[in-house]
Image (cartoon, rainbow over all chains, first blue to last red; front, side):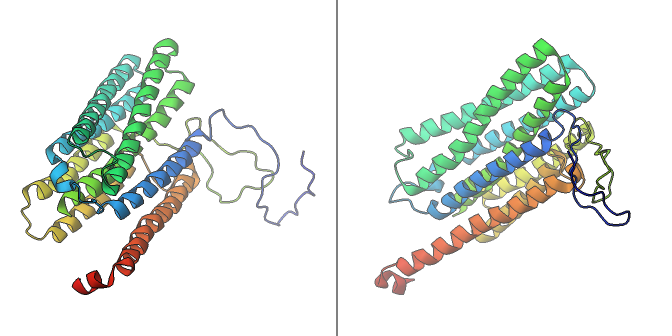
Amino acid sequence: MSTQTPPAAHAPVYYELDEHPHAPGASTMLGFWLYLMSDCLIFAMLFAAYGVYGGSFAGGPGPRELFDLSLVAVNTAMLLLSSITYGFAMIAIDEKRQKAVLGWLAVTALFGAAFLCIELYEFNHLIHEGAGPTRSAFLSSFFLLVGTHGLHVTFGMIWLAVLMVQVVRRGLIADNVRRLQCLSMFWHFLDVVWIGVFTFVYLLGVLR
Amino acid sequence: MSARNDTPFHGADDHQHGHDAHGGAAHGTRRGYVIGFVLSVLLTAPAFALVMTGVIADPRITAGIVTVLAAVQIVVHMVYFLHMNSKSESGWTLMALIFTAIIVLIAIAGSLWVMFNMNLNMMPKGMMDAM
């Protein structure tokens, strides 16, 4: 395998050329983190687009007329609560309490579902007011940015449901723990993106 | 959490990586999550309150405060919920994060700057005078 000449005793060697065993999933966390960073770049582009188009109302309604901040505050609370309940699920994993893990995951799913329902209610309300994504560049970029975040939460919910079934069927085996850790990063990351959304889109939008 | 050795370069004869089985994401403690949650509430509630009540007359000052609160909250979430630190995965997660942050900054600040200038320069002569 290794064809290089043996290094001199004092020469520093900067490469590892020999193969060596890796524990299964040893690099999953770093890989998943890199995926999240690429996801972060997608959101950066959507934020940039919203930043550019956010003031192009085309004579239509602007954030001040459209956004209901108390609804957004409730929505923010739902996502924040779902983040901490997922944290409690992770602690229950450390303590190997399977029932508690499933319980906290179920609570997380409920908060996530509440968040999605409120967001869909808001979208539906906007569209019925004639402020749909085709109304102006501002609304196009708004629906694209907030909708992409909502889509991420939706897929997170599906993932959560699948993992709950896996935990019921197989228990807290190493593979399931690893998957739950990945979803944990995904879920908390979405909460971080939401900080940007509620600040940049809603709060600063209303101030604009 | 990591059991890896801290020498920056591995010798060719060094087969021991010390990969820990559950990767670099350190587990939080209940205390850590509760602290993070309380800090988030303390940072979110004033931001909403400032905008919804409009206590500060100048919206630019309100916008500045809200932006700073959001930036602090992102750091809080990174530390207490995502368990970011300089040691996980030998610092590679932090390196990836810093790199991403730079790209994000260039993309957002660059877009706003370029498009703002373009809007100004594309404006008809009469509107330029009116500004």
